[in-house]
Image (cartoon, rainbow, N blue to C red; front, side, top):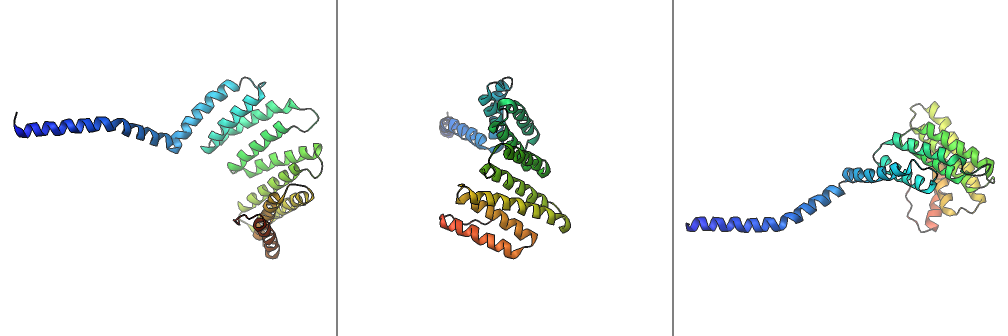
Length: 244
């Protein structure tokens, strides 16, 4: 064997040892990168959630597992912009929870309806979301005290839908009534918050919502007044003001 050939084989052998030692590390790093790649990670999450939901769906009588499995799967679907199957899950949850309580407030049914409304909102279907929130307001008013915070929540959600609907319209004559409906509902929510014990955080949120609606309808003075009130609450709570 020539000296040159011997050196070449030595280099090849050393390279093989280095590659053999580092290859598993490289492979693990590649696997970790693939797992942390968001779309791939969501696919894995969906597969696990689908398995759980497949087992839970035939047994709505086991209500906690049924709802938990549905929520887990819907969460993954929504993050993938797969809104239709998420809507189907929450429609089924509403049917499964409807009979849990008779002639009284039904928190599980309300929760399913609110989650359904949120999917419609995320899917840019504000009018259908508005129908959901309005039906919840009717239910709340039927079974809850007039100043219950849940009623303020529904009024706030209804106001947000009208506000977002207005933003999607081009003509001012169409936008203005929607902005006004948003303002009316935000004011009703704020009135309930002021009478209750919801705290300053809920009040600040309602004030910021009013600031946006009043600003966009063109009521500059009113908008600035709500803005100052919201900023004052944020500052009193040592929160950094992040204006909408």
